[in-house]
Image (cartoon, one colour):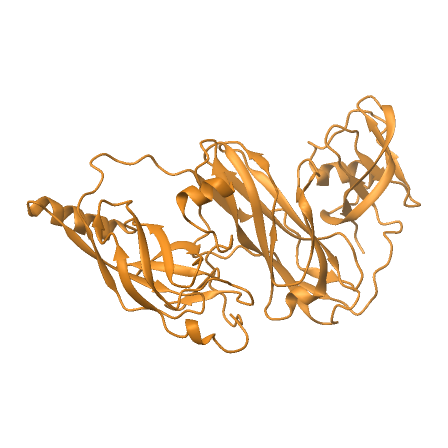
Length: 402
């Protein structure tokens, strides 16, 4: 992956998609003097076909996003980083400068209007040309004056549609609820992620809001494949609002939805009455040819429901009616004393609707919600043979009338 990015000469500054969040503290402290003003000295080459790789030389470009949570451009908040504007439209890919003086990118015409204008200019004049204005905004939101690049030609045939990676909040994401200091295994958000081509999801990022203190209610964060229960990447110790899960490395299959579950451990020192919620922060994914897949998150905010830190301390699961799934194993449920049991039918598996399955044992169940990570040593293979196996999975609470 590093080699690919190097070859493209594009440095990914962040995997966060564009968001518009009122009241975010974008950075704290003074803007570094070197980045208080952005200037473009030259664009090299200054002409060529669309897609030409160019180097912008100048000053005030950001080489780090340390301590920056977002970059504001024309009233909208983007992931932190430098941005290229073409005809005042944002090229939605944050990049970092290696030295604060240069930026490398490929000239792409963004809007249909700009493409149409250039096509018309190229068609009318022989030899034709089309000038487009390029600006730079650094991570602190400081914008340069424009310099011009002359488009000399455009593709004569339609380009192949890009691979897209579409993300939304899953309908099964937990409802707004109270959480307690010290509680573990709280599902904050579930995301549906659907590619339109085969590939690999390399990393996935989540922001813990509201700013500036929402993330301080969470001590650790984990990411799971919600269907298989497999943890993706490594457990992250929460130190900032924007948390990235590297090394996810899960296969993407065209038009098949991957459900990603964000699970948190609440800090023992979480502030009573404060809130936290998980927001999609973006992702990095490649198709089978090693090309970067386009992310659809631009201009949108995908957020789970708000969790409120309650005054009560966390207590063990107790005798709450619960079920638990593990793909490839027979389903589990609790008895009246809270003990885990394997379904005696030996065939009920993780493909069953959870509400229907809860009603099999607890007839008054009116709803379900993801509960916490629990460990049991009662798992069995189909037919209730093999094992018993020990594994930790997310349990589901079967909600009962009060």
